Amino acid sequence: MKKLLITTLMVGALVGSVFAQGTVSLPLGSVYKAEYSPDGVTITPVPVGNPAQVSTYGNLNIQVYYAPVGTAAPFGSAFSTASMMPSAWTASTTSPLQQVLGLAGITPSTTFTLQNATGGANSEVMVVGWTGTYANWDAAYTAWQASPTTVLLGWTGEALSGGALAWSNGTGNPGGSPPTTPVALATGAAGYNGLILTTTTIIPEPSTFALAGLGAAALLIFRRRK
Image (cartoon, rainbow, N blue to C red; front, side, top):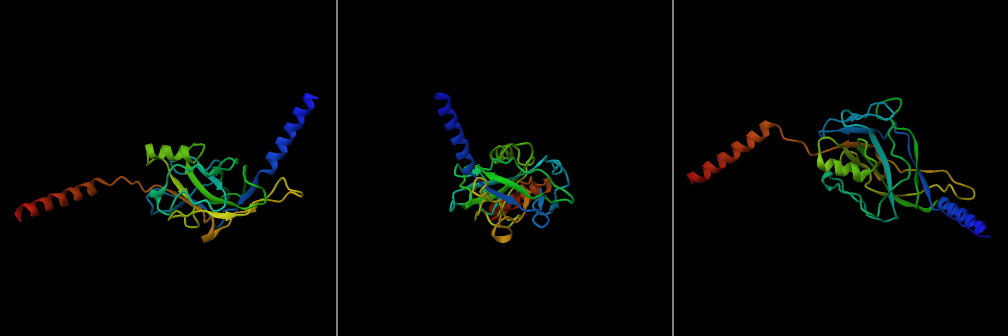
């Protein structure tokens, strides 16, 4: 009797976990590409590979984060607004997309599972990206803080990437009766517009420091003469 009860509970939990999830799909990136720009000016498509390598910065990583509908976007359009991911936002259970196929910048259509979302209902979503072997956004952001010139970050709605910071998106219901397929992420200005991974923490050239020093010295001399 105990074994039967335990088995029933386990099956019930498993069924419940299947129903408590939604699915979305990142579209084939023939238009909305994966690119990078270390200086914030020159934009380069990520080369073909699996995992794709972003110059000397390491692997490409693209991930979907989700939250209840209406949850405020965690970052703004300026790169300086990046931070650790707030607790309201959860990473999909699907591993970050790392592949670029066919031509530089083109990512495959990929299904992301939103484990704790209600299948078939809308969720607030956003797409983020980073370089390296970091498992998630927070690990990559922490590494970027420690060494800003070795990690690239990006997200939907950031000034270079464009698109929306976050948006309400439908989801598929794999546990429905009948099951429904993943819902494509909205694209363009109201959704995913591709990703351009970057860092605005650029170390000034020595000439920049020299010019700044000369300006400060000239100002000091001018004040003394007055």
